[in-house]
Length: 96
Image (tube, rainbow, N blue to C red; front, side, top):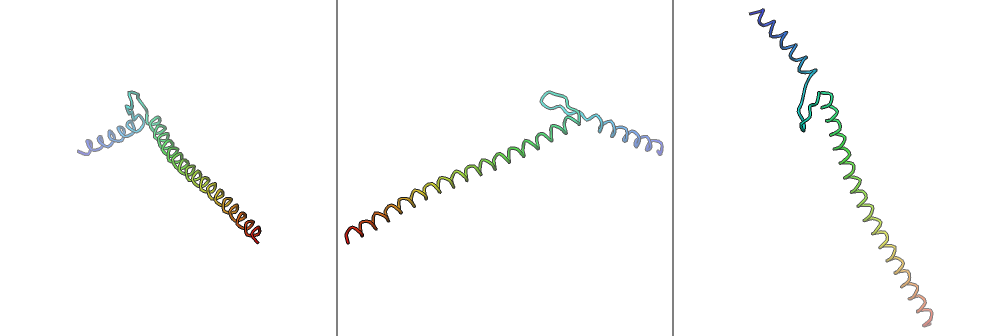
């Protein structure tokens, strides 16, 4: 039994090395080695990060657009208020 047990361990170790060094995965009809799979996974991670950054950037652009619109509206209201104030002052001066 010891000889068989030793054989299993050796076979298991060899199988582990073989499996580890030649992992083959069938993806979209193409054969990838473990190296290609790792590169593919890294690319997917990078694409996910890029998508998240792009979404955040779009939110920031929208926030900036809202802030600029609000600022322009407030500036227009301020100018209108200043014009009304000048008209009132000049009409008071004229009526005196």
